[in-house]
Image 1: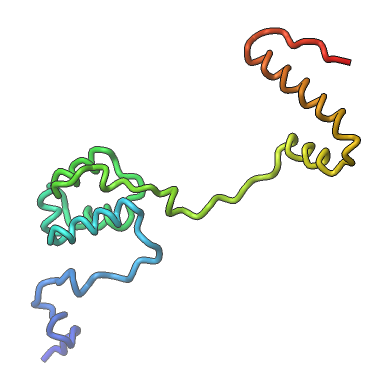
Image 2: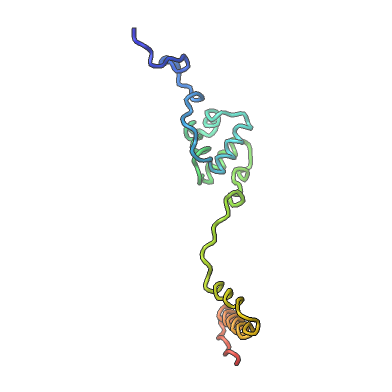
Amino acid sequence: MKQAFFPFPQFSEEGPYNAAIMAGRPPSKSAPLFGQHLAAARKAKGLSQEQFAKLLGTTRTAVDYYERRASNPSIDLIRRCADALGLAASEFVGDEAATAAPRKRGPKSELEQRMEVVARLPRARHEPQKTLRHEAACAAESAAAGAPAHAPSR
């Protein structure tokens, strides 16, 4: 007699494939915010991925993709999911900026570097620098208004 390749009854060749048991390897990174919200809403309604897929008119693997990997879902998909779950579409779109790590600041601009140099000067040398800053600000305002810049005061 042929020896069974699957020694456990739940993995028998005759038994149906069980998606709950054969779920694959765990994810290496967390799901996008949309997917997290979608999965939480689906579970709160007591629906399996298979049942939710039937409501959407798609497959279970598509729902799995939406919940685990879809980082930029279409507006149409968001609306279809909201309608199927009886929720507002805005509930699936969270504030990613609040959950994201703060961005690293780039190099300082030339103006910032010059201002630091001026800040390190002795107080007596600040006055000529203030005049230069005032003239630069006036020139910028004039350029923005479309008027010619006034001549620097001496």
